[in-house]
Structures are given as structure tokens and as C-alpha cells.
Image 1 (cartoon, helix red, strand yellow):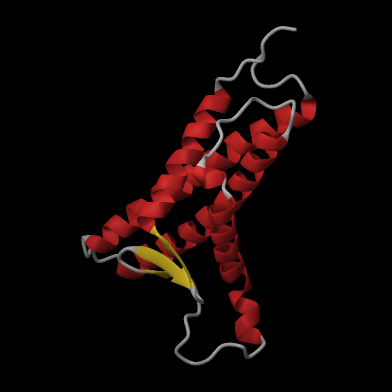
Image 2 (image 1 turned 180 degrees about the horizontal axis):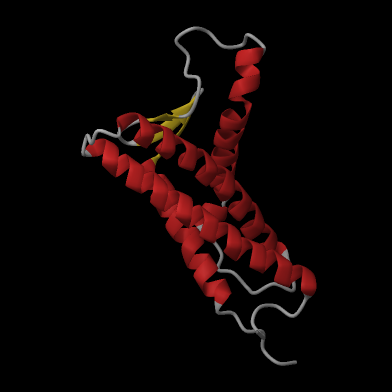
Length: 165
């Protein structure tokens, strides 16, 4: 409805970024909900841990996509300008989140190829303060900060109106 960049590629990047961040927020909310149920020790223990784990895996995949799109928007000359130094779009955060996504997505292959030993985790582990798998870990406090930064970026982009030429 007249919002966003006028360039079609830039518009597509921004639109997809906002959509993926919205998906990421839904997964984050579901992880929080199920982890809260676990903390309250309700009778839904198995359901809560399975659901929290599934939503956390989806959250990590969506975060990779959102960061990738955010970095592309930042480099695109026809996209809205972005502030410099946004932590979630930095190389260190990108490398950590993407390595974590790869650990999640390739655990099945590792097990099938006998590169896994009895006692090793078979899926993402949700601990009291972090998620971890095969040497990769992200603290929930870091995850929350990165989700907030992506939300703030998406909020700003969702109200962007390109100046008339």
C-alpha cells in the first residue's frame, strides 16, 4: 500500500525479512511458553520439552534466514538505510547462529554415518540457561537480544516509506 522500497528486488528482500522475523517471533514465543511449562513442572513434561525443542530448531533456522536477509538489505543500494554496528548482523553472530543451524540440521547424518557415539546428544539440548548441540551453544540471553534486534529492524522497515523522487 505504497510502503517499502520502490525497487522490486529491494521490496522483496524487505518483505521477506519482515515475514521471516514474524515467524521467528512466533517460534520464540512458543519456546518461551513451553520452557515456562517445564519450569513449573506441569504434568506435560514430555510434550513441553519436545515442543520447546522443535520450536527452538525452527527459531534458529528462521534466525539464519533473517540475518542473511538483513545483511543483504544492508548491502543493497536500493533498500532502506540501516544503522551501522547492529550486533545481530555482525560476522561473529552470523557465524555462531549458522554453525548452530548446521549442527541441528546435520545431526541425523552424523548418527547415520557412525560419527556419533552412545551418550552423545541425538538432538538439540535445552538446558537451564542455553541451547547446545555438538560443541555449539547459544545462551538464551543472547538469543533474546538477537531476537529483539531483529524485531526492532523489522519494525523500522515495516513503516519505511521511500521518499518521492
